[in-house]
Length: 320
Image (cartoon, rainbow, N blue to C red; front, side, top):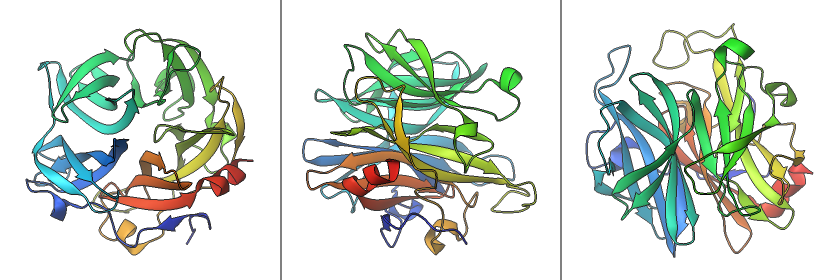
């Protein structure tokens, strides 16, 4: 069985499971995490209800707070939208970015006419004001924690099925003066540039700033057609891993360096046992502490939320 990088130290249990949620919950995973003052804030995806072989009853976004980033208290209400939109079916896979005392949220959005990536503002930790949607189909977004050359910068993963072939999706970057109008889209990295991906890649947690560059996580997907049942579905042939790279501080479309080996894989029993889809790692939060410790929050097997630790200098060395 493959292992995560030697520099990764995993918490010996999930940091959040359905047992921690005070309302109906089944799969608790793919959370966005940031710091607001001295508090850690988590917005997590919750797929709830009885699974009938095709879908759950619904998806909600829960919110939790922590003093240390390890022990979490989940609020008893879920996050709602400031304005209801009958076109929206659900929002999920949140990523949080704190900028100038405000918390912004990127999310995937299923609508009646396709899939969108959205950018919003979190109000009083209760409601999301939607600021903008990227053009369809664009699912994975992560916002940088400060403006670069006067503009907001967003990592994105368009899904051009017809022009690239099914599930051949790459990682891009774009920018905006106001978080509403997005443009200047540039390719950062293609699937072919990642040795442990042959299916798709995309943004993970929002990048963190270091003296060496923007430390940036990404998810990478490999398809193994020899695999059969790996979870609750009849067939699950994809393997999701987390990778790490370093982007230029002034031009984040430029890769300074990246590791050619996975940073995090599913290699613990609590990440694999009873997983909805086994061998799935999806990081949605990364926090650089003043001590140099990096906390990486990731969904495991589309089932639970987990936490890993690393030293920022060692992460940068992997990229170099």
